[in-house]
Length: 571
Image (cartoon, rainbow, N blue to C red):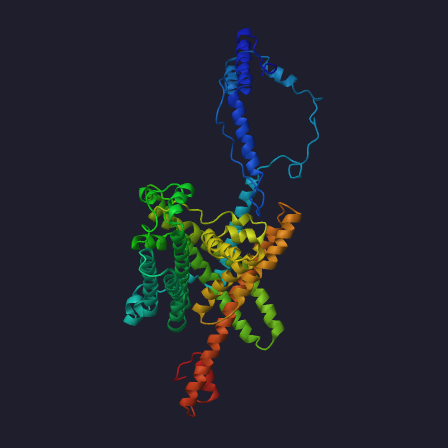
């Protein structure tokens, strides 16, 4: 600054020297060293990603000084002084500093996109990718609308509801009865635990009752859905609720059994491990936790693993509840729009194409491959929107209303460089449940880590298959095989990540296997199986009906074909 400054005043130069000296003194101070140490530790933390995840790619915001020395507005002060200076040779002094022979290349430096370059800010490229994403998806929606029409124009008005029969207005009785059955098993689990803690029944007999009650909560509801609930969506909602209740009751029984075995250590462990407890949680011990209100708080809470008391927040933030509710509504609306506007018409066309190419396996493979590409992008959007709507919006709404403190429902699974990291990070409530109630119990009975991992994936595969096969009223193994097929992918991606730490190859394999192969393929396979089963059942019913009511008109082949196609009896 002294060399570039054009003033001839000794006092002003002395003032500048004083300001620069203050800067230098600050750089020699302990405060400056503390700031540098914090920055260095932060950079070290950024450079050490979690095991199985990619190293961070930062879009750095403008740096803000947390602590500044006196005289930190040197540039501003110099500009104000230049504007007041009447020295006519100031421009000339600036020109002298840039002669034609001034060297521009002063040291060896790599290009900005090279590996040896310093850390770059890719925020501008990120903005470009967002623009490309919006434009390309807008084009996708326009193509779907031009081919199939705008789906919102086909939605009926509310008057159609009131004109329907009373039986059609009411929610199916089996669906309501299934929800009530779930509550009966929750109350039953509380009653059995109450008798155990009061020593009214023996430990072995009580655990036998728990075993029957807990498994019946899923088995009875599965039978109700299989035999009485015909709508797959209603059946899926009911079986999902029953599965969540089954997992919660297992955790409730398992944890309370452990509390009974270690009553003295329970309160000490609670203080040692759990923070942010409210006054009631600080005083809670077993069997004080065995109340109907406690088990129902756990049933409503966004967790699958039971404990005596949970971390709590001091109050409900209603503005956050409103914001999350709006986001949840937008996410659900977009999911419904993509499913109705893109997925459903393509699945209809798929079934028509398969029917047209019936008996030609090669043509079937070509048709399935074509629709696999058509559905891959939209199914990925639906999956991401569903994840955001449920795991972020809905679970945070539940946590906020219940003042549930621990809200780490997911972690950065999108950075998974190996498939096992994805399963550990994307669904933390299920991960905690599997670790506590499947993995470590398997280790305790003598299984190796690999054997316990296999058991975990087997249980998860069975549950995935139940959630799909029971509502659709068909037993298939596509979801089960897809889950068990994760084991070879885990071995492959772990080997790649071990040989090339921080490589994106495992992450690319994860995205392709889940979003562009796995999910659209599952949609296609289950749709084809569901259509074939219902189509064959409808055909058999028509043939049986015609056999019972045989007549020259109704029993003719043309009449049968017409009925299959939905023609009126008069035609």
